[in-house]
Length: 423
Image (cartoon, rainbow, N blue to C red; front, side, top):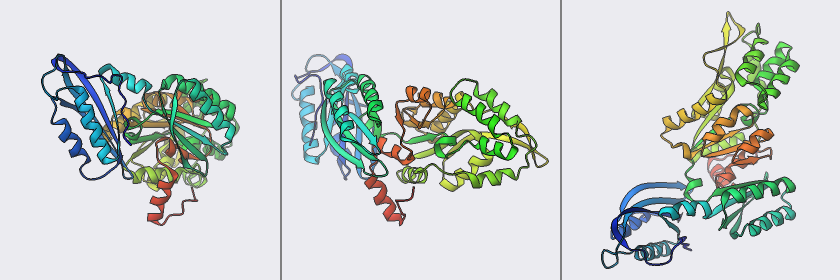
């Protein structure tokens, strides 16, 4: 089962003063002793440990080790990089796991042209779509190593393991094909780079929930049509979000604070929202929401769903009535990115291991900052800027982009006695 990726197959000697690096990524079923076996092999060679990262998701281990060594003349028997490769390959074979290796500048090239996950979402997924995508992969000079189904409902999700492609170029090609075939396609580096994502930060209005809260409030104030026009323009990025928020909030002046309870009852979660949050929490992800909406509504979502972190605006209330003003600093486009960075710091998670999900222009900065930016049923401006876009109406489809198949969701829910058919 093991697979070795390396630009050189010759014997590369150890020694000398030039420091070089070797990236080792081991993936497969988790079991006792895997880490000790790997480091026992490394202990027999003149290397130092530069970095280690390990992730276990539903019994599947991904272990990444970056070691440093000195390049130059050979320093003795067994002191070659080729010998280490042979020893590591033997360990992977014994454990029934896959191993990937790359060295120095080759590590950068490995990430550039190494294995990729191509995830295809369709509802339904037609044969023509798969034919078009496979054709584009072949035209890029890449190879499809494995195909598996991650889900068959509420959408069909097929994942391909692809090798030999430049991810940026392939993403452009497949994005064009996705438009033609009316499916969603995501291209991500395989292995540790995807599996290590540990914090998901999500927009609220029109993402976690199916409405814009300020429009629900405006309906009670009798100014819905006016507020809708400003909201649409702001989400497209045509006007400044902070200025548009103040303009809209001013129209709510005089509403009794009891309106918050009525709006909370009107809020409807996006299909798949509970399943997504529940599954990620069970797999030890941290989950956060960041909203240009209002804490008077988002606080209840935090309590109901068990969300770890949240940031939103707060409407000022004096003598039981809304004043038409916002209290404190406005959570706008740069504010959302700052919130993502703050949540990651509090959780002790690198920004590279975060996922940001949103639909509007004020989500662009956090989508750009995150390790993976996802546009969910988003405006064209956001779809173009994000790493990948999801257009199916089910929020839990995002789980498949993180490599979490439907079978794992159902198995975990069955343990809890939950009905998985309800999103």
